Structure formats: structure tokens, C-alpha cells
Length: 89
Image (cartoon, rainbow, N blue to C red; front, top):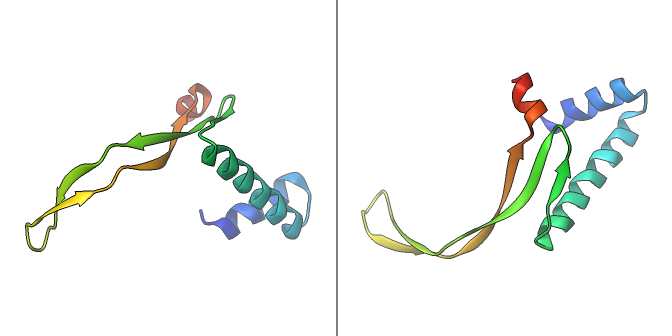
């Protein structure tokens, strides 16, 4: 499912226009992004938790040449499915 299909599904389920569904989805994504930028986490009971994980700096290899390269430390977004979502899968 892509974003357009998700918006269409949201609009049908909620009985709203696609424009309103798009605005709601964009607002949700923005709210989650802002919270994660502040190193917070977003928990949706029954669905899951969005959080930030920190990766340490490490050495890697260029697959074409085999040369060692340094990979910088960085923050990555992480999602952990909740019990109800896991049970439905």
C-alpha cells in the first residue's frame, strides 16, 4: 500500500474527502517527526511505538573495492509493534 492508497482508504473509512484525509495523515507524520527529533517517543496503544535509536560509529567495507570505510554515528527511527498488532499478523 502506498500513500495514495492509504489516503483513499482513510477517506472511505472515515467518510471524509481525500483532501481531508491527506491533511490528517500529513499532520500525523509531522507530529511523529517533531516528537522523534526531540528524542521523544510516540506510543499508540494496541498499534505500536515509534522511538529513536542511536547507532554507534563503526567500520564498514565498500563492497566493490573491499576498502574499509568509516560509518558515522547517527540516530535512526525505530518502530516496535504492539501486542494487538502482532497478534493480528
